[in-house]
Every structure is written in structure tokens, then in C-alpha cells.
Length: 219
Image 1 (cartoon, rainbow, N blue to C red):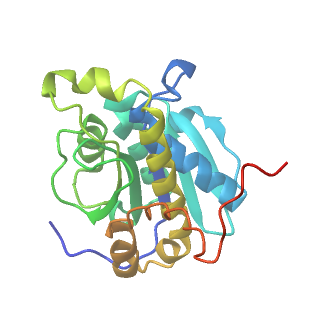
Image 2: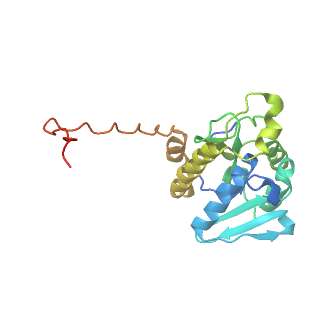
Image 3: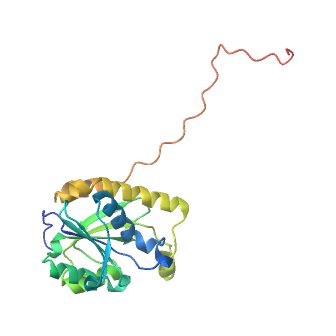
């Protein structure tokens, strides 16, 4: 793995599967982030057949957004096509994807390293010719049985899990200005920190000592 660069991202890719039947499934967490980021930047997606995906150009931010429409295990086809056309280096690419090994509500930003068995990352690395690109991993949790992984990622999260995932996406969006500047160190510290647990509810206030019990005999 090469040293992490400090260049701003020029391409943000959200990984997922196309089609209405996959929209709410855990495997589409990368799409969820990309859609929210496009809204934040005022960019609009359109289908680009030469890039095999939905593409948005956030001109003011100087970044392309991409959601491959090739299904997860062929994500690299779209990423490689767009990156080559616009001469975007792998180190200028941020790939956002779901992560089984991280609990819902947590994030991990990293540069390079292993692929963790993620089919979208495997194909991305194959088409880019390297593992040295940025990844933002969105925790979705693990079913506990490796034989259930495929079924797990292709189903919607439980309501309480989805709330945690949505909260993590909000934190990632809040960190976008830092990412956009190429300040990866600050963004990593911010995003990789575990969110504070919710505060327990306050106990009900005890009645004041001067309060007198009500005389039930009075009308």
C-alpha cells in the first residue's frame, strides 16, 4: 500500500445494485450516500451509457459522482471507464460502500489495503489496476453466519439498524467539506471516531418535600 495522498477527490463512487427491488437493501448503502451528496451539492444524475452508470457533475465542487448500473460485481467497469476518460488517478477516487465487519452507525475511512471479500471492490481494483484508492465504509453489521451474508446484504435493514445507518450517512455528509479539501487526516479522525452512545432518559422528578398529599375526602 502506498502512502495516503492529500489530493482532493475528483470522483466519488457509490456502490450498489440497480433496480427498484434493491433500492432499500443494505448492499446499496453506497448509493444512499451518493444520492444525498448529490442533493447537498445541487447536482443531478443522468444515465451515461459510455460510463455504464448514473453520473452527476458537481461543477462548483470540482467532483464527479457515479453510481454504477452494472450490478455490484461489475462496478469496476463503470469506474474504470469514467476515470480513464477524465484522466482521474486512483488516488483521486473515493469509493463508498457497505461494510459487514462494522456495526450499523459506524464508519471507516481508509486508503488502500485489503478488499475484505467485497465483490464491488474486487472488480474496482481489477479495472483500476491497484488497491490504492480511498474507501468510505458504511457499517451495516454482520448476520453472524457467513452462509447468510448474501441473503443479509440483499435485504432491507431492520428499522433500528436503518436509523443508525442514516445517522452515519448524516455524519459523513457533514464531513464532506473536509474531504473536499483533501484534508484526509482530519476527515479520518472525524469519521472513524465512534459516535457517542445515546444518553439515558432522565428519571422522573421526585415531588418536592413541601408538597402535601391531596385529601381524597374533599370534593
